[in-house]
Length: 235
Image (cartoon, rainbow, N blue to C red; front, side, top):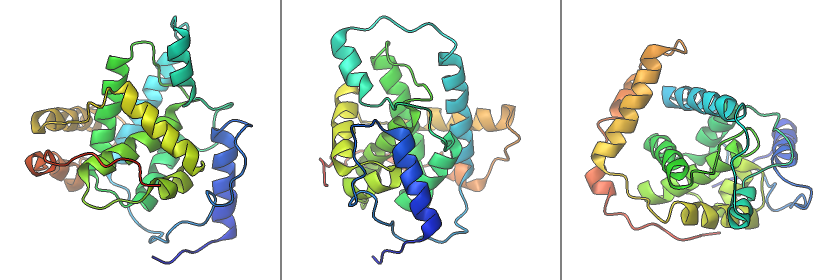
């Protein structure tokens, strides 16, 4: 697959890298290589807008709460997802970026949402905030793509999408899987319940229109996908 580079794209990648990650991370040239070209007019499905709306509300609510008591072990695990400042790129822009470049199935975003919800349930002290939501998103989509899709890009490519190094992407994936206790299975009924939740969000606010794309993924044939074995790190 050919690679292209533009000055505006380079500026955006460097801004994401600077915003999301700590000062101990150097600007890895290999991680900042240009991405595979995609059509600039590739239309984002409604699920992207709906998911970003849900996450924005979750972040807003969590940041009004006092910090939860955490053990030192939990702090160390959770801190891998925390940036030093709030990124300039919005949640919706970041999701759109992932959609534009990752070329994963739309179902991956529903399953990524299921994984994030599962993570919060399994780790009560973990809260999604403006400092960690971007890292959680890129990691959850990476994991869902590996679990669902027959073909997917490498960790190195996802790192470039997210503006981080391959080493960080690998680390985040390992921690994310550990926090989930490797519980990646999403049954058809569970998948449909998350679709229904997203559809209710469309109907109740945000001015979104229910598109065929969102309805189609709700009739997703998960039985075929359930036989997938999760693919370990491919940098």
